[in-house]
Image (tube, rainbow, N blue to C red; front, side, top):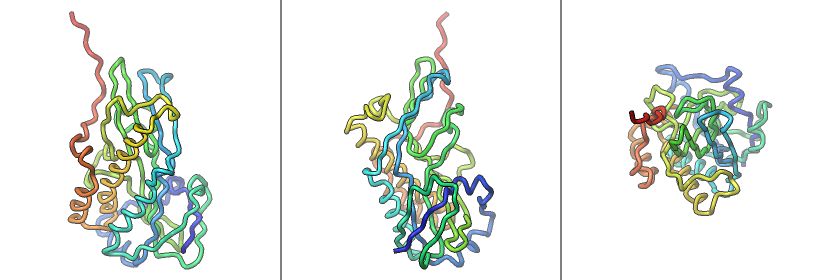
Length: 267
């Protein structure tokens, strides 16, 4: 079993290691990759984020969700998606190191590359407020008495050279490979029954619903995200995404993000 003490990949990207793919580069990048180790750290924490009319009313709480098994689901799904073109090898990761700014140290016969799935932090992609949204988030937006609820799976994936530790490419988790706007993160609108003011106040039923929703968002978006690297083809994207997205989410198409406009007063 291979072992890796992982780096904080978001820090590496900020430090200049991000390498956006240019036309014709994907095949060159992948030419020498035959074995891949998959690591996921997105399934550790879920956030409850409230964005109010005034910033002073914003709140955030979080709960540990390791027992939901989302990281294992990610590793299994990515491994299956890659299996037709690559040999996927098991990896044991020290996930605590994902919050460290230290570079990674690889041990014993690493694969050619690591594919690392980790939480992303993005300034409010729905309503362009100043609030940052991180990882798996249940988002409650209230504005002058109008309420909206969303589940978001904010993550990024890094393809890392296992021997040099350099990031070869990164892509944000997305629902459409060809999206040119920031609103491509896996998102689903929810109803008020999903919300709790605190993580401690979530019922078992609410937790179960969130677990299913986050799982569906991640599984449905992974094929698009891997396709952005050139790791899988478009036919596999369509086939896999149709199989992954649950009927619940299929029946609730993603809304076009619009600012909430307060009702006008009758004259």
